[in-house]
Length: 112
Image (cartoon, rainbow, N blue to C red; front, side, top):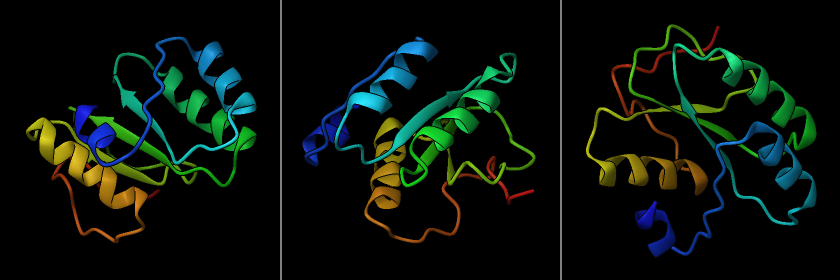
């Protein structure tokens, strides 16, 4: 996300869950984990849980183009991707800087 890089974040990405887990073990400084939610793929649920176990202090942010009925306790926030990319990046940045937000999307709702 170019917008986050412009705000000083270094972005490391992977589409491999094993590599993502390994990166959390070896990286010294991690601001957050941002996961792209795909409703047809349920592995994000287990992945988010295992990443929380590896680094309990690192926020986990879920990006979703589809409505989400609830957030499990190990996911800190949800940002809807139906918005323009700049707004998605801005919402993620707000979460990373500790700003409280009301709703970044009508698709994301409360915790279970």
